[in-house]
Image 1 (cartoon, rainbow, N blue to C red):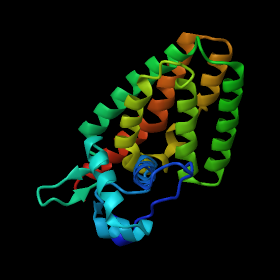
Image 2 (image 1 turned 45 degrees about the vertical axis):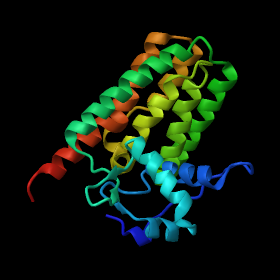
Image 3 (image 1 turned 180 degrees about the horizontal axis):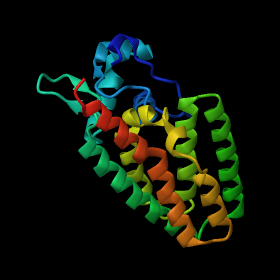
Length: 232
């Protein structure tokens, strides 16, 4: 578990007209979503202010928003923590992720352009390089970009905020899962997703999207949580 004084909160690009409060929220949200903050980590204003070289004021508002999104928990002693994952919670979240993302993928087919499909291919190639280099931050960020690129093809982007809420709740634990991805993820399902999009095959796209999540997250996550729950 990370010491609050040793938190790693990666920088992210923000536009020049972004307020400090919004920039702090986005940076903390991204750190949680990519798993830079471990499950069970206690968060303090002082620790976060030191890690981000900021005053506590914008951090306080960011934490309030993240608590409302279930990314952090407020404990009875008013301390804040990144939730610890349990097998039951994990199963609920990944089941919801599959349902939402299979639906969102299918709804995007009619709108997606060849240009966007080519961009998704390029993202997948960058993911391959990140995997070879064992760059877990890049791998997670690029995976989100790949899927978001697909779902955002639908001009009615009502599913994306809900999907990102699930990513946010899975993020801290998913980083631990990604470390063992090679054991379960034997087929590049992103290539199957791209191929299905190129042929506008909705059924194949739905299958590839479901398999991508199951093999990339579910199997490894269930095994890890089962091992963690066993007595030493």
